Image (cartoon, rainbow, N blue to C red):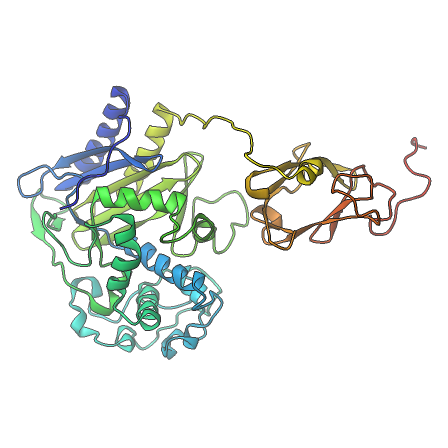
Length: 468
């Protein structure tokens, strides 16, 4: 048995009471035999609480629960590791690596984001309650009509899609997906209590009668080929470690840049009126003015949720052993909200850069796209940030590249290239040698419509003038 994660400074008494009350309400109103809640703060388990009983004892941070579709996030991490290792591309059709004609032309990215068009469920009987021996081969998970929509046209949640991704991992790594997971993810992150089959102490899964306070035991079978869609068991302590990883990354598993890619909506919202979405194996939700990342999960007898707010450095976890009833997704989201409201994060102290290229320092300050003012700031690791000065316009952060250019990380300019173009003088970036910025063909100059020949279409030689 692994030791619980070391706690940081404890919550204040009022915060502890509010957190405990939230899981108590969730367990009582949801009529769950037991419910465990936890909060992660700044990469550490900050608070944990439990209600109900498991084997006539209160569950704790080390009690295993089945986590259902949270398993999909682990499979997605394995696939992104394959991508980062150069063994596949997200745009590859699955057929390039795996002989599964039922998947049609779906790409790996479409499988990760549930836009492959595949059916939501495996061929009957109900896969979550029946043993994997009923589907010995990958092709056995599909019914007569595996494709329900054209690939890439719409989001349609697909459990078989993640069964295929698990098979892809096995094909490219040459080992069962759960062995690869243990070796590449669980062991580096210290998640010794996460496993495909239950290990004591663990909760039993129950169905609660809708109209009477009585219980019915649920089966906990090995689902075989469908296991990558929802097989794993875990604990609050292990999921706290995992939540910290999802927020900050770990170079032994995946870096922060790849995790940020996974957290981005696979299909960007068309407007600001949205409350949920999906990235690459990661669910997105907007609650209480913040964007949460993570996943929810269910299997017969169990419900699970992990929601994290990278901006706040907070995550909430809720685990219950009931088929339905407790709203664990709302509980996990509320744990984040309560922690943030009762004890807002204290900003890290400002510190100057440890090194700064004088030419890049000279590049900072006001720039103009036509008459629109922007401000360019220097960030760590030679990064840049462009933001509109009057609140109107397109801003972005930029990552420095080895060739002397920068790549946009977010907003309209995500993926676009920023170049510094020098004049004939060839002097430093900030010198008087007709320097301008080229951002995806848009030209930024040091003065509004600077008459230096850089602005496409030219600038009227008479310059600025009073109105007629």
